[in-house]
Length: 68
Length: 431
Image 1: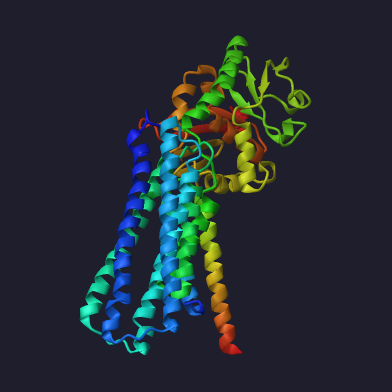
Image 2 (image 1 turned 135 degrees about the horizontal axis):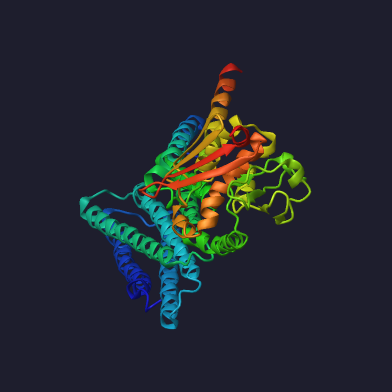
């Protein structure tokens, strides 16, 4: 059995997820109130950046695949 | 538990028992469907062969075992919660939660086995001469849809029970975010497994999303929160003692936050308060070597560790530096970031420096609750300021390398904003 997603699909998903995480980190506290937020805003932002880096890695892999 | 919220506790017994009932009804529909395959289909030229029969029976038994598993864990969960209900406590509700998660996984496995069985009926059996006819297909589909609908319903009921358990779960021992995170990870893992099995890319995206958010919640939701009133309760007695000390010593002068130049230990935080109301700033030679004593004879005053000293150190830790190694511009730029982004204490913070005057404005400050009580401590509040004001005062003295006097601290009328004024030493000397 093969996994139903290829590298391109994962790349797209990583891009969308990183945007979602970064937007969440920016609007989370304003939306639900700083006193009630149970997520650490900085950590959500770090997670968003980590996912964005993974997206860039997939792009780099794609470029390498095209070049070689 | 009964006395506090009887409807929730009863629900945790009734919901799993209703799942047992749903399993019984779904088994009824499944047996009807099985009867169609083993009787009706032979009328439509199906030829018996062990080749398809063994695969069919294997999946059929797996479906029945999965359903038995769902019924068993839900029954045990209901009995467990009934025992807890009678004992009037909600200790270890995670036992019931784990049982329900196992039940949901068993139901998911049941759906997977049923899909394999459907592929045998709608695929393999045509190779054994089966002729399609709506006469057998419609009753088959009706029973299959009813069976699957009931499975979805019982999973929904189990999920509702889990939500109830998380709702009543005490946050003393475990953070709710962790429970939600693990549920997301489990659900994500299950969906990914099904996506892998059936090659469904949409399910794979959904499963990856669940797993990602589960991991984010585990990573970002690991802080423990306490009520704001706890903070006031904990710090108030020490502030009250300091207030009585200043009252007894009749210290009427301004508070000066001491820069490293005045101290033997550069990283220490100290504040000097003169006994005389018009007392000026001290000289470094008067303080150095005496900073660990409380009473100072020449000039007459007291040296204390300000209430916000630990907060200053926490801010240094969060910024990854020492305030003695940075300048005022760095503090002006980075301290608001530490307050707003790292500690999430305020919506906005601004430090304005105008010659010798420094004004710190904090908008929508999270810890405003403590001001109501602290403001009753006249000496501390008017001379040193709140713990936050003294923490910022220490940071200003360390980074500027000069004496900083506390001038004023004002809470806005709406009670959410804070304005703190300081002055640095050079201006005091000119005066």
